[in-house]
Image 1 (cartoon, rainbow, N blue to C red):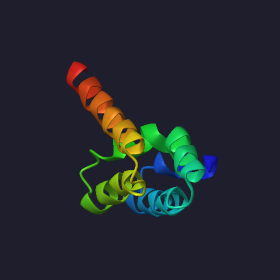
Image 2 (cartoon, one colour):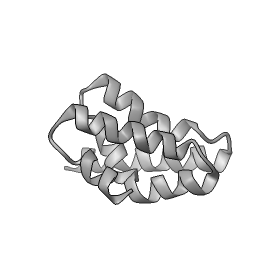
Image 3 (cartoon, rainbow, N blue to C red):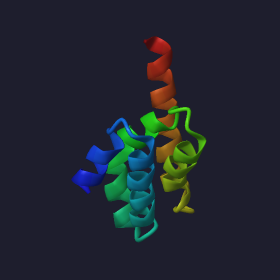
Image 4 (cartoon, helix red, strand yellow):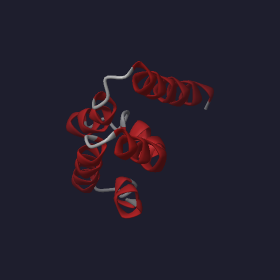
Amino acid sequence: MQQLVALLKEDNVNTQLEAAWCLNNIAGGTDEHAMSVLEAAGDSLITLLSSGDVPLEVCCSRCSYHRDSVEWNHRIWSLRFYYARQQELL
């Protein structure tokens, strides 16, 4: 998974999209899989939500929609809010 996270940081949008797609598939497994994706790639996925590339943004955001639990959705919302707040402070 570390290699996929590294690919999210590349300058090539197609590479980022493919890596995000792979992480999306992993997150679609068990709760443990989803949490491991969030822990390993959460910051990068959230950063890419404001990439300006709509397909990439959609793919990154979908990692949060695999879980129906309120706790999972709350964590994703919190991370998105934190990222947005950090951008305002810059």
